Length: 137
Image 1 (cartoon, one colour):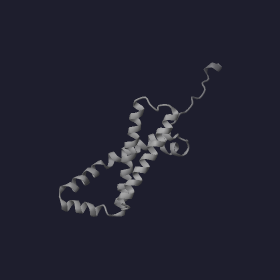
Image 2: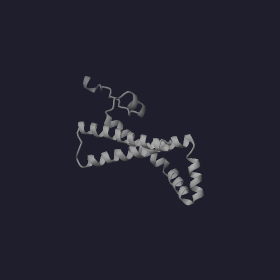
Image 3: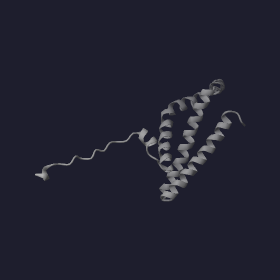
Image 4: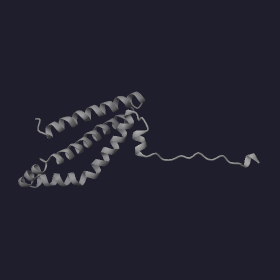
């Protein structure tokens, strides 16, 4: 009779992004992976807007001047900076994935080192872009 009694089955639930970001300590490679997906999604969503702005800037000299005036606002500059970060980070992380596709740096230490390189290079490029965008040089 004891054999007929069933134990309750364990309950597995999917975890959300909030739990991933707050409850779990992800390694640096995991953070790079999440940010790579986030930056790709951001670029995908804003692609029509970016193509429209590019088209308008190439139409004539007058439209280019209007485009320059549009980009002079601080909010637009900040949005441009975020999109530049997304592009630069996604580009650097994509190169990291191409390196991993050649079976280099696929161990734990290599993943950590390439993640650090992605963060450093994309941050430096974003800082250089921000300096140019805000008129440092």
